[in-house]
Image (cartoon, rainbow, N blue to C red; front, side, top):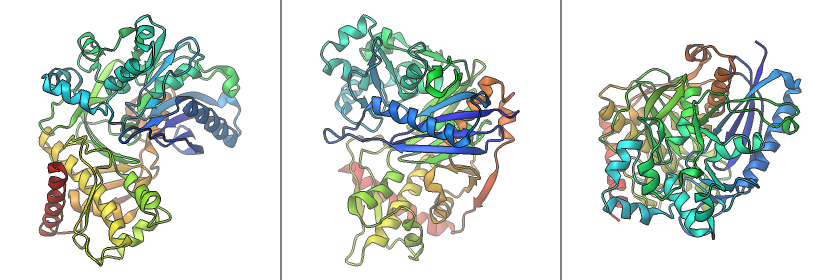
Length: 494
């Protein structure tokens, strides 16, 4: 089949559109960054209207690059930064407040109050999540409480809530479709992942009116058609998934025990657990991996807030590098880390610590420490954090993990991928196409449109580009990890 698939990858710092063919080969790509707003310490916001504008622009640019007859573009898939919260007016389609981003920590005190009241166990049983400002529920309530008249408007049905996929779908379909998929719903603290429905007790607990909530559909499903004037044809939207689940789909992690790690602004490790929603004993998240044909596959997930953002900090904050690519040769120029550890808790620590009040720190500095040591420490910190998650998941799942599939912009760094293999003790597999998040959205859309017949059909597209295998002995690995654990302990104690 010659049909093409348009994938929208709406990320934390930019929006990308990619056109794929049936073999999973990228045919065109366009990308635009958008503004980051930091009104107070620990607060992060986006302009949802700007996100919509960038989405339109990159889709049109990508479609122009393939110079395809619009009839060849069979469907659209959407993947998105999860948890980021938008509330908008149903009549005008305009947001009533800037989007509150997943990184935002403004509701940390609310979460602590709910924990003190004993609410976390109830929340975790239903949602698989922990009480943390990372998720959407407390962000929704904050908007309703701080925008004049918003709570009354929400209760009367005049407002809509959605993550960015839902907001984009609304505008693509001219306001005809207010829907999300099960993966995005599972990240709100309001969705019962076992019963697959919005949970009335949690809606009441977080003071979120049901009238705000979107319909929840399969990840590969009929989401309506886009307005024909947008791209010259009424193209159906047939797939949606949150970015980390989409990356797992792009990596063809369809069998229980398969695990992937995505390196973007943050780092997210997802372990497929099949039809069993495994309850973590190590503060991992239990989440929906995907829902296809009405059947749910679950996953364990570990979320690291700062990965590629640590390298961005070296470039934009400290200005010790001009580009991220410099870090590979800088790290490789040292025969050891010289005892320097960076704990990049710039917006708190994610899994398995879940400490929103932790802050970043550098340890082991001497007069000889300079940009090279900082660059290596930043790369190492991403790998150490990944090992923390892998270790916890091995304990939770009860199975030995052997291979970690990696993707995202950071994995082009060969030094970092070798170090990742060394500290995790796993083989690290890098695929030919590393933008697997957009690819996963394309695969879901293709499945929803009948371009692919099954998940097995999709699996046959996955291709290995390079495998990194562990190259250090157990003793050296232990010394490195012990130094990391001491550094993290100090940050947590502070």
